[in-house]
Image (cartoon, rainbow, N blue to C red):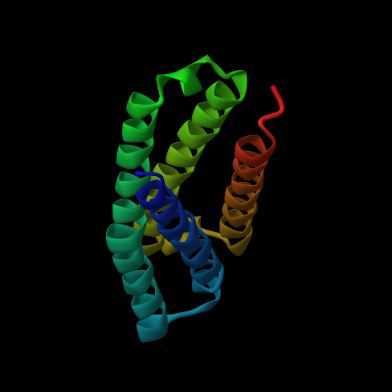
Length: 135
């Protein structure tokens, strides 16, 4: 279960980081190149991003069911909150991909760069909590 959880996390976070990087290029593009980038970002999101998130969450829940003592650890509570924050970023990214397609003037390179940084910081915080189990 843990291996599948970690595999899901890698797929999910890797997808979010790749998509945010790709989407930073979109505001500068026009025409067919822009459409192809948005199409690629949406496809990656729907396949790798959503499936990775589902696998990570499902097997994370299975791991908690199998090891209920983890729910007593304060660091796990913080980790779950950070995962919820990742889910919010996940949904926000999907909305911004749609906005890039439907209303191109509303998306900026800066916004996608910030989302990329937030995902990176959340990943680092989660890794620290899991490895160090500080409290």
